[in-house]
Length: 410
Image (cartoon, rainbow, N blue to C red; front, side, top):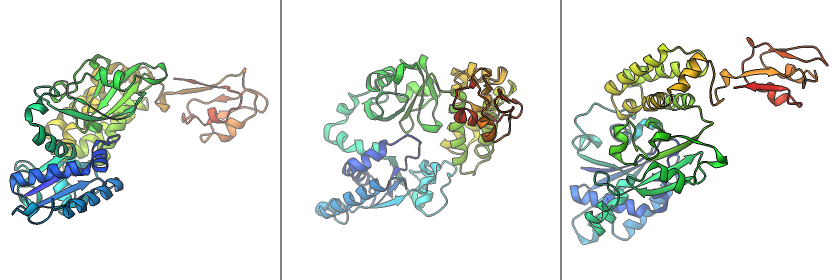
């Protein structure tokens, strides 16, 4: 029997587990010790993201201190209970955050999920029964043992007790790590804890749960942040990453960005995830380039339904969430990209139109000389013009012009 801690935390912008492993590793180790005692395990493994060298250093020190104090090793505190901890550095793959892929990586195999059942508790590490939880879960165990279950259930909601750590990032005044009771309204997190949106901008959305999570819009501001409330709308707390976005954010580009991440991180084992995410990414790339069609929106939904219902692991099943959630809440932005060939937020460079104001242009030719596509034509000391069919929308002309003669229509 084995006890394993998932400290991989591969989601962009998430650093909750890192703060515990670096700041209070003994609490997590104590939780693993209690789990090992409960199930009769003698070996434990902490799987840490390779990009967390300080966390690894602190964990090694904490393990050495625990061994020296007699809390780890053989015959702990004079009893017949023995337990040893080992540290494994992550393989640098997002998919290794999935339980069966993580245990395969510890065994020295390629980190790829397997079909379930059997579950990890039956056939986990080296095909033995394995208790596998994340850092935050183990770190909560000592406090629950010390203060009691009723104390813990007194925080949060009946179905989602306790607190949750979130990594609050993006377009919000107060970024950083926060801890709030489960069930706290999103509005309180963004505007009270987070201090609101900087520079007087309007709130637009929150990406929650990492790249495989969904986007919450303004109508969700009063929604409670707990497992059941988010599951009902197709979102999830996930790792606890929370990226706030303001009015200048293009939601189609957000969907494309997260789909690009999950597609690159797909292990490629199952066809729905390997091929389905690639097809969805291709469609999104066409849309942000102004080459999409209205039929693409139906295709995205069909692909998402197929992937969610047939992918092998949680990464594949949740990969379409950013696309579907933005399509549901911000369909008008998709339509603008397709029908009007316009990005309402002015973010998608392929949909920008560059032109030269003949009144401001001095005819210095600097923009033409530096245009990588040779799309700017004219004669010295006379206004230049941009050939729209040749323009690649790179913005080089804007950077080169010293007279502010280049206008950009978004």
